[in-house]
Length: 131
Image (tube, rainbow, N blue to C red; front, side):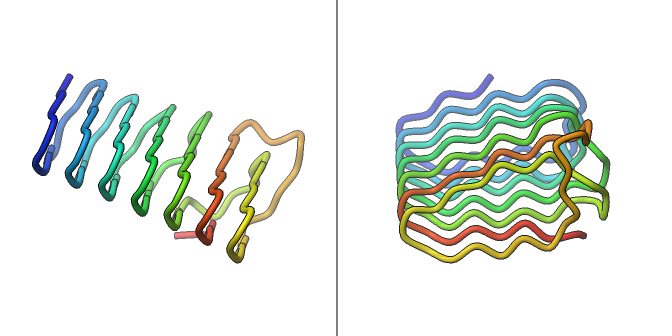
């Protein structure tokens, strides 16, 4: 677990669960393998790795998630920021919402899919595309 008030957080090539909470500062999780939990009040969050579950929440900041493996749950919420996800070219149970912004969904969807993506932003665009 990493908790910080101010400053960037970087985790590289970690195997196992990762939890990061920041008040102000960017978070970069590169090459992680395991469950991911990341929260930020003000800062960008970048995740590139493999996970079964990833839960990401930011009040103000963009989120960029890239994964190479199919997963059970990807949950991303932002109050003010763009959300970009690149996921394997599979079928997903997809829930998305943006109040003020565009949406670009480029993956197949089905409520019967075992992988679920739930992305929402109030002020920002969202993109879900195959990697």
